[in-house]
Image (cartoon, rainbow, N blue to C red; front, side, top):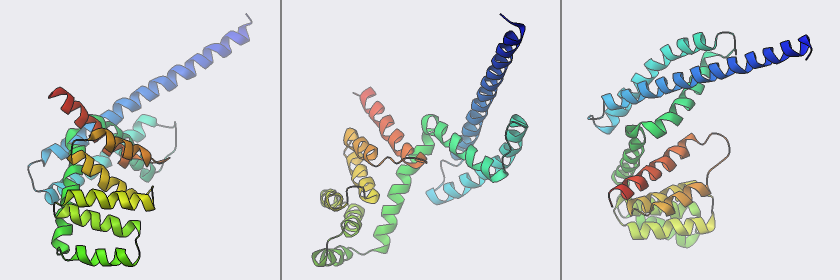
Amino acid sequence: MKKKTIITILLALFVITTKGNAQTEKAVFYKKVAEQNCDCIKKFEDLDFKTKGIKSDACMRENLKSFVIEYKALIKDEEKLADAQIKRLLKREGIQIMITECKPFYEIFDQLFYEQLKNKKEENPIFQIDTLTSKIKEKATARLFTNRGYLYMAYDQYESAITDFKEALKLKPDYHSAVFGLAHYYIHKEEYTKALELYNQIKVNGNDDFLSIFIKRVKNRMKEKTKNK
């Protein structure tokens, strides 16, 4: 084998090894980001939902400042990224790990849903259901059925809610708000397979971190249900 060919191969191996090491270092760093952000949520777990959200968010924002500096030192001249790009990258990678390893993180989304229902009930007297019914009779739309479905849910009328979400999806099969409402109903009834089918139905290309959290949340509940049998 020619000397030039051997040198080329050795250089290629060096580049591959270097890149592999860099990827490993990044993976370790992303895990650190996720763990410290999870600690932010755990630190304020016992507070009311609103205060917990504000304090956890402030804690994670403070973490992000030091993470940006550390990340720049890690990548050095490998890639030139602005601070805003690094923040977005770290949030995305951290979220993907937190979905798997930070239970308090995805439990927040359960609490968020019930907080939204609570607010909806406070802002909309029960007679608003009749108002929406009149509008649906005039012209049925996916939005009107979904809005009434969430109101039914806020007033614990789950059977009526599921009917409305299904009607909304007949009119507009990809109506995300109705899908999330119906999926939550199935979660409430512990029909997790049906909830997963709905989430997978609307999975979009590109940035679907938010949806990934809901999918992971359902899968974890399925595991817990199996363990408890």
